[in-house]
Length: 160
Image (cartoon, rainbow, N blue to C red; front, top):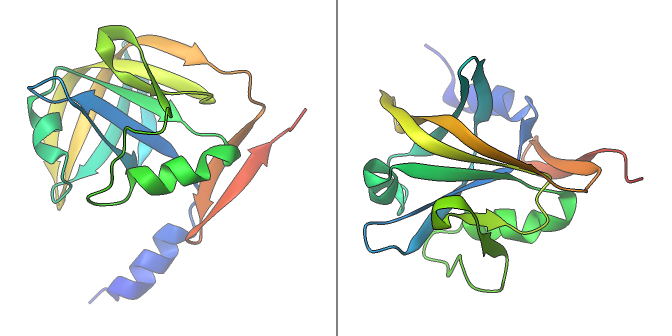
């Protein structure tokens, strides 16, 4: 039988990008989370994939949403990554976001952003896999990105 702690430790040893994923709920209120997994899925058509814990407070909003946005964070945005991962936090105060296409919150000063139409949802164990058809992208002027590796945040890329 697989040792769950060793599995978690092995997963923590695979660096992942740090992104926040946002949408609007049925009442037009912003909802979002820090994603543990985000990846490109296809170039033709342009698709991305993100997974959302089914226990997340914002899960219902993403179950009903037609669009979502992904903001790739810079090292200076570690506090935002932690805030968006905190259950019960006031996530959309403090001026961290600006309205993008479809009114979706996009993180200010993000390394990159993706605005997606929700293409498909799939169950994946204790998560829901969201597949987004990319409708728009943004590129920030930041030369460094943040990754999560062995339970800590780290900078990658050139500061110049």
